[in-house]
Length: 316
Length: 321
Image (cartoon, rainbow over all chains, first blue to last red; front, top):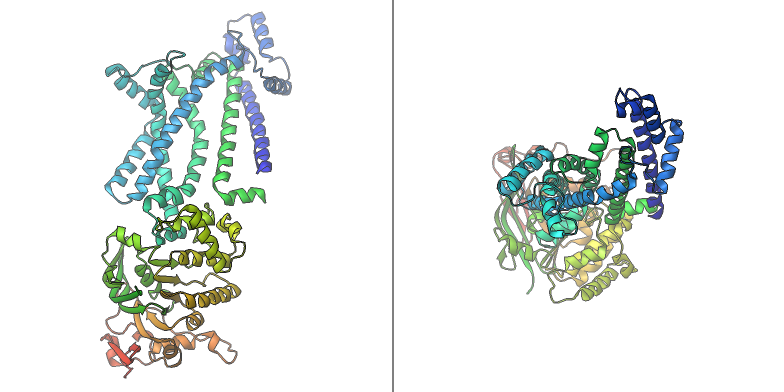
């Protein structure tokens, strides 16, 4: 198990390097040099030279990458080109908001989606199953920013139940929670549908397996068969889906944070891309990739924890 | 109370998009406590449907008619809750394939504790003690350690022992073993048969053993039902069936059993032809199309059971008492 974890972490680091190399390549693929793109065509050569030196673009690419990682290890992600504030500070300010948003959305989606999927299986072929099925597909089909705009319109503008913008007063948990509801729901809604469908599909497969027949032959109540005997197995594909989907959740956070003017990583990246603020883009992408890699590893370890067969494969 | 089971005129059909499959037709079965009943026949003859019906585990598209009276209660049409209360308490089933019979992500001990859920009078610790005791009884050494194992860590033979232990733990009045040795290799099969033979001496309920393996049936059972295409074609004491078979199908089946050959044969004998379609069962005898003794009435009149002795009956126009 430990060897497996170490292997996964090593692979994760490789993925980080690869992502940053691609990022650097992307910067060089933009026509003209980044300094010109950032400053516009009418900037003086001196100003351009200054910016190029500040972004470290006068060095060879491989050196830039090595330096970037070297600095990143010590917690230095470079400096915002415009405000000259450390990128790490910017990220640290924005990250908690995004993480809270992502975790809230994911938890909501799991807490509603998994029971809905189970209910669908227990009521298979009934009207309830059909309604859950149709509703799931419907919410999957609606993009999160559309949900964000409409929920904003209905609950914040028309009904005035919840705040429309921001992340709430700092230090006031209740106000922060209220500001979280709409954005979290906007992201979670589609995932509720995804997870319900996924749980239903894998659950249907598991429910046909002989060991479920054994559990039935011993007269175990159906809810126990579903929640203990089937769900432990059926949840595994859902964990993988959610881990992979976290990337999608974070990218939908970009839109949702824009709609609700929520300070967060999404907003930080969008602003940085718009102003060609490369160090901020790089630093933020590195952090997001690291989080993503970490979650994928955590999910794999969780699966190994849940399924003793997987565990043995890694042990042996 | 001594257990007693009587199925009368039991029919099961499966509703499918292509039409109804008549998997079981007008079957009569009787058994009382202390008896070991064998059910034998080739694949697709309705053996599994019969025991699945007895264990109340038929799928949702099955339509059942007739009656299954167990200790005075008709299981057909019993409400689902009362059916469930019988399963794993009065009626226990040992499945066909021990490799897939247990949940792969839960330990053996955890599952066997759950299977005793009808015993509200026992604490978890007491249930675990019973498991250890029963596992030892079916020949598993190191029972305590095995309880912490996952199913994939046990061999096939050991898993089938655990499955038998699970069934025994419920103290059933009716123990059904559906092809208990089919998925095992020959050595394991011999061990499991040996175990079942030992158990039948101490067990005082009804045991039903399903197999297409004649040797298994001959070694374990008191009485045998021979099934073909969803019907019981012959039934009788194990001696009568193996030494005085009267139905042409039973005879053909015995003639195909490699264990009964004295000489080496170049080709194994077979019964020519194949099972009739269970979508549109024949009007006459189900075996008529493959029967070497078929004559005029066979193709349009279903034969009634001819009682040969008090315990031996065959459904064949050519058999007379």
